[in-house]
Length: 503
Image 1 (cartoon, rainbow, N blue to C red):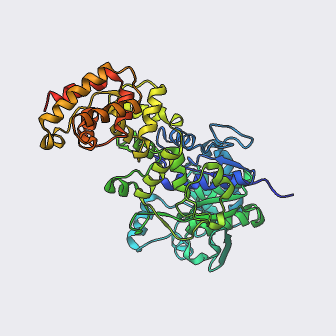
Image 2: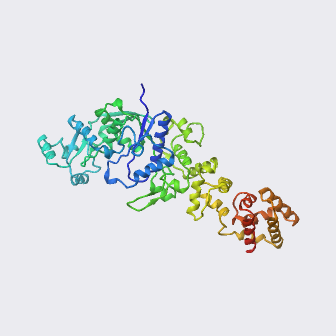
Image 3: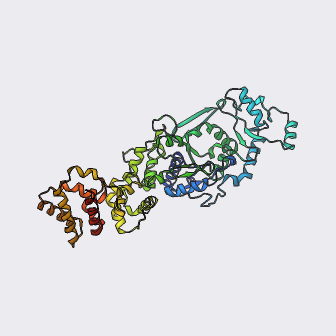
């Protein structure tokens, strides 16, 4: 019987969640759901020195915003709890001890000062087959000395003892067969002096204990793969190892190197899913959510970074991605991040979705700009009128605020050069006509406007721009009669009068 698909995302709670991390979540999630499997989030907090308050909550808030809800996690519970490595600490030592007993790992007693001295002495020093013989460890010390050091409580780490000049192979679901020579890999620490496991030991033990069947992670973890393959073969048997896929990097827009937060700061775009406020530095990094991205667009954009379904289709709902995703169609090479393309996705999703599904988000942007709004039929109608012109949710403020509050500035300079007494008289009479009007639909307003223009022997085209600027403040917005219809009689007449007083 085939095992149930179980995948995991295992972040460290050390800060905001980068684009690459969310894409790793997405590919794991899509694969699991497509195969009727489970998506697990496991918090890898073994490095307590890098722990950042609030980072774990931020991770789960990000996943909730994206609609990528885990089946099991510290927040959601599950049959393989606990899902924080710090809460599983006692379990790891037995596996490190087993490796020691089998001669596949060793105690290393070197102090931080001794290691620093060795790094100064040897360029690019690595604790490996080539150097372990000159260090203070259970391979160079006699057994009695080792026992005494342990009895005295001397701090130590446990390192894997890599075999010399052996080939380590595994099949990657994206890259095919990958081969490493152990002479190129250092003896990684498995258990730290504080008794906490390193990533290398913990990830193998936890994947085994949690019955993980597939492990998708960034390609930056490829160099660690031979250590993990060996740990699997030593502890649990290579046949129990999950199938691996190392995802390509998300690259800078010019393609030169991995995209970082600094690149986003430098080039003016977000690299985190949501705003992240670092409690240590006090620095806030802006996120896609706060910049005005819809989660549907954000997820769609991430899926396209390094994957396509081969048909040329670009817009996918999450359900469509679950149906069409294939790990075999993930590219081996890095994917260049293009912020303009990201905004294109958002614009398309703003147009594609009915505003009722995101108007509460838009209302938040109005509020942030000091404009209180009531979410009602009129507000929905306004947003539907202007959404074609919006790239980000924040753009609704510039495109629609004139409906809700009088324009702060009026582009008089666009009216003045061609303004004359004839036009002045037209608008004076338009005020009177509109005040007397019992009908206030856009079609009625347009009919009255054009009939009055003909009576004044003026072309409607000459009058439309001044009318628009009177209502809106500038040369933008949807149909001017639709605007007047929504503004209502009193507000429309008031705005015409106000601008006439400036001319």
